[in-house]
Image (tube, rainbow, N blue to C red):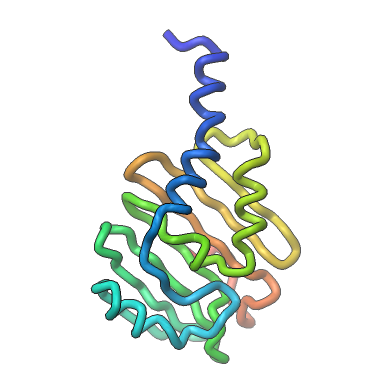
Length: 157
């Protein structure tokens, strides 16, 4: 039987585990808030498969990483990546994927937070939710001010 202290210690390390998983080397792809132009060349370099789909107000590039993780990048009509989402057995390279917003994520991961397997960053210009455990990670990050007209955050998964 676990005591509250043992459970608290176990989950306190989730942020550290998440940060280690993120800082480990992974392939690089387009970056949140930046142009989508590098998706195809990055995918070829890292032998990842890409499927692109057109939606009414944006494009989705679904990238199957060799690890089995699926990374989806959402690009506005102007070609800027306004959101990313992932799910799979490993975290994508969030330093590359989040770009300039990585520091907000890193600060949140280091700070005490109540969610045992969940991390959330809620700022005016950047929102991120990430959850999971070993071999089962999921998350999304988006720029609220860059969402195309008519696109709701709930669509970004």
